[in-house]
Length: 185
Image (cartoon, rainbow, N blue to C red):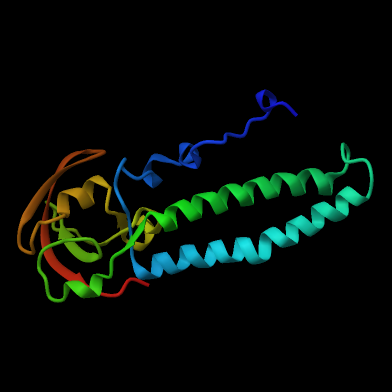
């Protein structure tokens, strides 16, 4: 089939990513050792287990004859494209990854990648965040990406200082109560 009629792109797999998963141009993909391990494990599973299983299903479905109305063949080919796209994405992320172990910071009171930071807002409400890689961010677990506005405001600040940053609800001021470097699971 002519490529003009296919919705796939040969180019950048990052174009479909949400803005929170995109890396700033020219930067490394900073990631914790555990996050790097999870990406490698997912890639290995896709390459060694999932893709060969789907290839077998597609081969079986193709051997049944008419492919135009064969659901196993059609959906199998679609799933193969999804798997291949994810494999390309993971390969790029892993190739561009720079593993940063927060435990190497020791008893540093300055905030860098991997820091677990306890903050208090103007009302005294405390929240704890860990600065992690883009692929590890999960606000429900208190993990914010190092490219997020809050993390960028925190980087290089020290325990006991106050920071100001632009949040979706306006400019906020937060006090840094504690900075700890611990293993990220």
